[in-house]
Amino acid sequence: MGKYISRRLAIAIPMIVAISMVTFLFINLAPGDPIDAMLDPEELYAMTEKQVESLRRHYGLDKPLPVRYALWLAQVVRGNFGYSYYTYDAVLREIAVRVMPTVELTLTALALGTVIGVAFGVVSALRQYSILDYVLSVASLFGLAIPTFFFALVALYLFAVVFPILPVFGMSTTGFFPLHDNLYHLIMPAGVLSLDLMASVTRYTRTAMLEVLNSDYVTTARAKGLSEHVVIGRHAFRNALLPLITITTLRLPYLFGGAIIVETMFSWPGMGLLAVDSIHARDYPVLMGLTFFVAVLVLFSNLLADIMYAYADPRIRYG
Image (cartoon, rainbow, N blue to C red; front, side):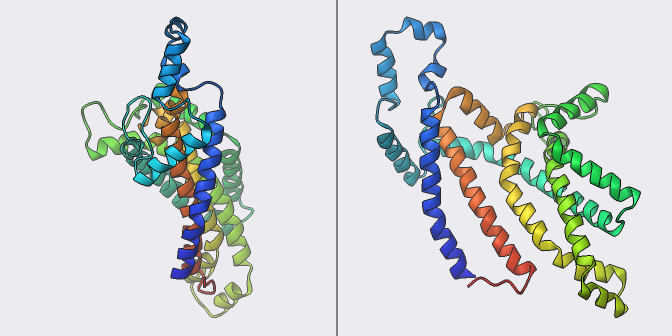
């Protein structure tokens, strides 16, 4: 297993470099540049071409793309991922400030979506073709078909306008940050973010459990006189874990993508909101740092899935 992990980590390095090259190219080929975003149209109109070029030279935007990428890569090696065009702070420090709110939001959504989705999927499989099965199947289809921003708008309308029982914006009440207040603010954004994962896990769990429940070894376990709890928990559910591991671990990067929408709509001060602000400001170094973070997260999720496979199914071994 150790050799396998080392090999995967060695392969990940050139993959991350290739992803960063493509991302850097497309970010810098987008229309406009940071100078256009920094200045008001009137200020930009009043400046001479020489002044604009001086600003571009100050931020290194006058250099060719390969040179700018090499300079950015040198900053990555130093560990700061460059400096923001607006705050002049190290990108790594800016991301570090925002990473914990996003981790809190996404891990809560991951836990909610996985636990509730698995429970719904198991119940749906055990009550196949019942009214409850149909209700859960239709609900999961709605969860997959309707985009996250729509659920966010519905949640904002229901729990902030019709029944004003939940806070709408931010991580806590201004000037007040105890744990229960933070959790109170977390309910709505984490719940909205977990719906898509919950729907996927419900459907995958139902399919996996139905396949396992009809297998010979489950029939044999029941013939031995084992209780239904033992048959379901020890024999059926464990063998249905592999597809669940896939959908759960590989959904983690998608949760970070969904967090961009949720954090923006609920003013949650995480990396998603930082990404939106950086896009509006064309803050290239921050965007590159966030993309680098997500690329590492995707590769880590794949590696985590492989490791969990080996522990869930002893027949799987990586040499």
